[in-house]
Structures are given as C-alpha cells and as structure tokens.
Length: 512
Image (cartoon, rainbow, N blue to C red):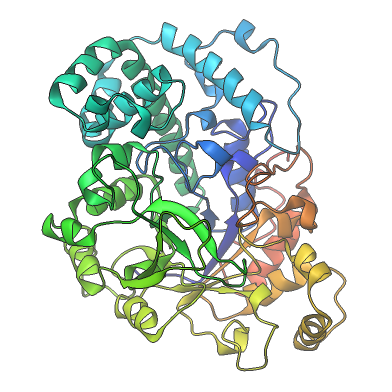
C-alpha cells in the first residue's frame, strides 16, 4: 500500500450543518465531500461511527461493528419513500452550533420508527442481514434487550441473559422479534447511506480515514456476546480496566473504564474477533487510525476498584504476532511498497523503544502534533525538522484544543519558541500551523475543521477526562466559504499535496 503525499480535514459527521439537530449522511455530507474535492483535499478523517451511549462519545459505543442510527439522513429516507413530507413538516428548534443529544435522539428515533413501519423486506436487506449476521444478530438482540430493560447495563439483566443461557436467548429472540428487526433495519439504512457517501467520496478523489479504538465499551454487544475474551468475573463484572497513567492531558491519568482483553484467549482463536472487526471496518473506510496503538506493545492495567488511573501496571500486549495474523488475513502483497496494512498508528503518550519498533516493523505511519512541539527545544520529536516522511502531522486533533485555544493558554516560553520557529509574528496561529503541517515532509497532513475556520477554545470537540460537554460541536450553514477552500487549495498546491489541488472556479462547491 503506497502512501501518496496528501492532505485533508478531520471532521466527524455529527459536526456537519443541517436542520435536524445533528450532522448526518445526507445532502450536507455530500456537499462536504464536494468542498473537500474543490479544495484539493484527498483525505477525510472521521471519528468512530458506532452507536453512542452514555456521554455521547464515539469511543464508547454499543458495538464495534454497528453504525450510529442518529446519523441516518431523514432527507434520504424521504427520497426512498420511507418518510412522508408531513413527517418533516414540524422540526424541533434544535440549536445550530451544537448537538443537544437528548432531544435529537428522541426525535430521530421517532422518525426511524415511522420509516420502519413503511419498510418492506427486500433482497438487499436480506443480503445485508446474512452477510453481517456474525455481529448483527448479537447486536440487534442486545439492543432490543437493553430497550426492554430501560437502557440498563447488561450486567443488571436476568442472570440467564447475562450468562447467555441458550433457552433464555431463544425466548428473547421470540419475545423481542419485532424490536430485533427494527434494530437490523436501522443498521441496514445506516450502511446503505454510508456506502453511497463513500462511493461519492471516491468519485471525488477523496479517501476516508476511519478510526478504530483499541478498546470497546463495557456496556456493549461485543462484551456481552464474547465475555470469554475479556477480564470479567463470574458475574460479568470488571476486574481490571483500561486507561493511561498521568500524562499531558491529566495529572491523575485517564481511567477509561474499558474492559481489557484476554490476549491469550484471542491468540488461541487466531485473533479472529479482531480480524473480523478490521475486515468490517475496511469495507467502509480506506485507511484506519488505530487509537492507542501503544496498547498492542504494552497497556496500562488499572484495578477496577481504583477511582483514578494513578495506580496500575504496564502489561505486555500481543506484540508482533497479532499483526502477523492481521497481515495473513487482511494484508496486501509483501512485495508492494509501503505499509502492508492500511493502518495509521496513534502513537501519542508514553512511547517506548518497543512501541517504535512494533510500529516501524510494519511500516505504519505514526502521528505528530504541532501543539506538542514547543515545550522543550530543537530536539523535540514533534518539531517538523525532526520528521521522517512516514508520519501524519496535525496542528491538533479532536482531543486537543483548537490551535487558537492552545496558543491563548500556552506558556510564555511556548509562545516565544513558536514565534521563533514560525519566523514571524502570527496573524492567525491556526493557519500558520496548517501551513507548517502542509509544508512538512509528513506523508499526510490533516487539520480539524475548527482550525480551518480559525476558531477558539469554544469550538473544542473533546477535553479528555471531562465528563460532559464533549462531542457536540457543529459548524453552521454558511460558516465555511469560498475563501477557505481557495486558501486550502493554494497551500495544497504549493506544497505538493495533491495533483487536483486547484482553486478552479468551474468546480462544483457546496453552499456551506
């Protein structure tokens, strides 16, 4: 898999504009892809697309395989005849700059219920269910049971369901047959719409970078259906959880609370669950950023009883054998130049020589964050003059402040070094960082849409460790204009990041 020098934008679909309270996979998403193409961008990086639960985090989903039904476009359902114009005649007064998840979810689920009432089984639906039965059946039953229990976690259900006794599961399939079918319908619609959007992206020369978190949510179909793969006690309760020790983001570390894998059990099964997870992901995206890559070399194990991540231990991960199994099942020809698996390694945080060796053995590009570059000196690995080609550079990601927000809160020493490195007194630090990233030798350069719009800390997508207020940011209709695309196209052409990067007035552009 040869990686061509390219650039793009990091944007979760929930952040797209539109009148339905949350970005979706409809006309605004197609317009967004058109804008990327007009601006010469060859990459669109997204966050995980799974169905979110408590906290609305795309990194804490009910399934590692399923899609988020709240992203289903009402406009496309209307086109299919599954909604009527009167269904969209009275839309709640949702805020335009932020997702108010509670009201949006309630309204969206009502719409999807109406669409399900009008839906008739057909060949494509039956084919989708058959091809995805290995995850879809468990997921649909899990969600139907969760609904019937008022959203309660699976560990609180009847003991026979918690332990998946065959008789109890058979009764559940019968008792909740209609609800199971409705959840399957939502997945069919999600992936049908996503496939159309992905095809449009390819027509426009845009590749999609997906995101696979290394860990899955505890309250998920993945854990409920595969309890033997995780460190749980006899009642299904967690014994240890995932996180990271104190770092740049938090003085007490980050206690994520995800269950940890029994890698010995996964290895004995040929890592089949992981292979199917990545195989499924690669049907829907072109490259995968694996979040917390260092966990494959060693991960931070926290006793489940600990309230923070300060007390824990490093435990050896699956290492090279895991990626050898992936390569055998999914990889490209070994004679092909570049990495043989379409993976970007999120290698931020505490990185050891072992993590670097594992990353480099497989040729995975790592990540560089410009906001991290100005706290030491010229030897800092995040400064562009220290990069190798095989990396992906960002001014900041969804986990960082915006570049303007970072600069406003940076120390005087960081600001001073930043100004010296840039060689100018910055007028707009966000665009100065975009220029710096685009001009670097890194094979990929990506910026958040917040930085393209030169927004401050109020537009931050996620603050790790903050319990609420994350993941809801959206940009508004008309906020992204022709000046942005021209400027982006000019930088992309100037620094050789795309043959199509031209500000061509005849190209179709979205009305953002």
